[in-house]
Image 1 (spheres, rainbow, N blue to C red):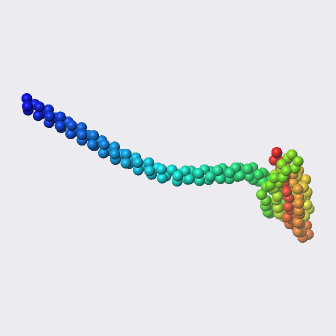
Image 2 (tube, rainbow, N blue to C red; image 1 turned 30 degrees about the vertical axis):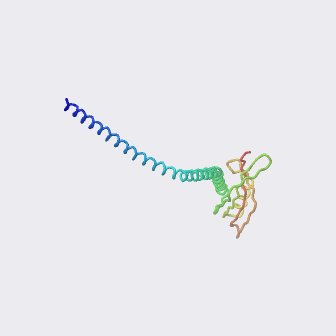
Image 3 (cartoon, rainbow, N blue to C red; image 1 turned 120 degrees about the vertical axis):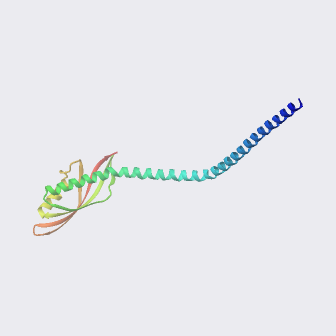
Amino acid sequence: MKSGKKVWLIVGIVIFAIVLAVLFSTYFRQAGEREQLENNLWAAQVLVPKLTAQKEDLEDQLAQARSLLDISRAKFPESVESIKYGEDLFEIADDCDVELTSLSMSNPSSKKVGAGTYSVSSFAVDVNGDVSDILDFVDALRAGADFQLPWSAEVTAVRINYADTAGTATINLNIYAYKGE
């Protein structure tokens, strides 16, 4: 029986050694993982302030971009109106048998009169044609009857250069359109 006890002792020592080896292996693996996690945590703590500052910068850029978008959206309808004004001016010129050679516009502005607000666009229009046709064109602009939408024009200056019956003219005018409140 002595040999049976020795076998059991050897088997016990081997099992104990295997368990001890598994425990040491698990411990060292977990210690390595813990060190890696601590390094990752340290790196994340270093990055957090940088990322926070970067987020704030991006939020500021987003706010600026939205503001620019709002400004652009506000100007867009006025730009579309100015295209319509130009179309009407070309039609009036055609009806009066004058050639519209140049059309320039300043940025639209707002003018408040009483409870209403008006969009005011200033134009400089150059035309060529007979002097009588140029005068008809100026009268048509002043009367505003040929405008397609409810706009009103105010002729602010007319300069006519002529030789015999033909001439050129530069006409400055303001076009008013109702914007509402």
